[in-house]
Image (cartoon, rainbow, N blue to C red; front, side, top):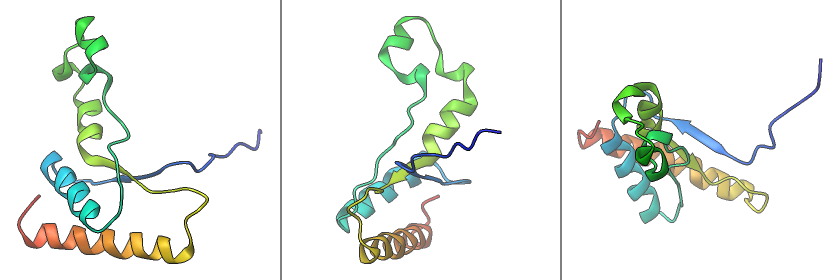
Length: 104
């Protein structure tokens, strides 16, 4: 077997059981804490080129669901251990804060 591994260039988080509104609120809350996150995956039927080819988002519910519940956290070679701790602690706190506000 080949010995392959990921380059580790992405730190994806799946927000299982959460809505797009929760994802968007989490991204905004983390930004206020100085943590840049992103929606890394966009389902192809949501892109203009695919829409123009006739792709309909409703035909791809799994891709849309993945798009709505996934974000990527910062991950790069210049992150210190303190940076990683800050990201982890603030991710957990922001997640709890949003749940406490009733955002699902």
